[in-house]
Amino acid sequence: MIDIKYGHDAAPSEIIKWSIEKYYPRIAIASSFSIEDTVIIDIATQIQPNLKIFYINTGFHFKETDDVKEALKNTYNLNIVEYLPLLSIEEQTLKYGPELHEKNPDVCCKLRKVEPIRRALQEVDAWITGLRREQATTRRDLEAVELEYKDDGRPLTKVNPLTYWTRKQVWSYIRNNQLPYNTLYDKGYMSIGCEPCTRPIQQGEDERKGRWTGKGKIECGIHTFLKTKKSESGEKNHGKLFT
Ligand code: SF4
Image 1: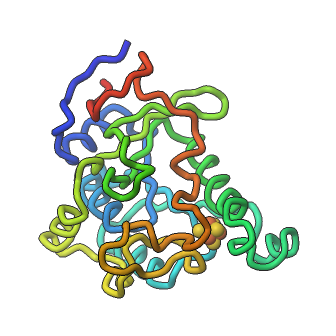
Image 2: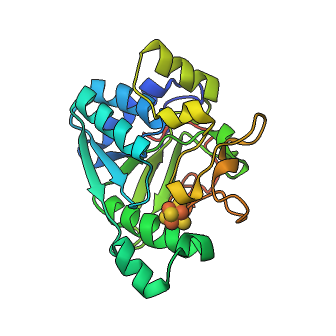
C-alpha cells in the first residue's frame, strides 16, 4: 500500500533526501551534466557523497560536455559510472551505414542511449533525473515521483525533484552557488545532447527545439521506454511522494 507523505510543494532537497534515505545504495542519478543535473548533484552529494551517477557516453558528446563533467568530477569527487553502447561508432557505421543519426535517429538513440540506460537501471531500484515540466510538451504531466516497471516487471521509482522548477530557478541556483556549467549555454544552446543532433535555438523557441531539428523528435527514448504507473491505483499522484 502506498502512503503519501509530502505535497507537491516539497523542495527538491526534501525530495532528494527522502529518496536517498529510502533507496541508498540502490539509487543513482542519471546525468548528462546539464544545469538541472548539476543542481541535483550539488544537493545529493551533500546528503550522500558517494551516490552513484550514471553517465551514458554515446561517443557523440560535445567536448564542452566532457569539460564540465571533469570539472564537476573534480569539484565533488563524484562517483561517476560510465555506460557505453554495445557497438563502437565504427562498428555501428559498419553495420548500419554512416550517419545513422541523420537517417534514423530513433534507431541511433536506441543503440547509443536507451540500451545502455536499460542496462544501468538493472542495478538500482530508483533513479533521480533533472526533468522539469517546463522543458517540453512531452513533460507537462511529469510527477515528482513516478513508478515505472523494468522489462522483467520489477518496480523502479523515478524521482524528478525539479519537476516544478522553472529554468530561471535552475540558473539562480547555479549562479548563487557558483557551480560549473557547460559553456555551450552561453552560446545559445538550451538543451545539450549529442553534437550531431543539437543546435542553438532562437529567443522564444521551446527549450528542446534545438534537438533533432527537422526530425519530428524531441525525446531520445531514455525517459519514455519503460512502462509507467503513476500510483498503485493508476491515478496521478500530483507530485506527492511515495513512502
Ligand atoms: S542524439 Fe543523435 S547521435 Fe546521439 S544517440 Fe541519438 S541520434 Fe545518435
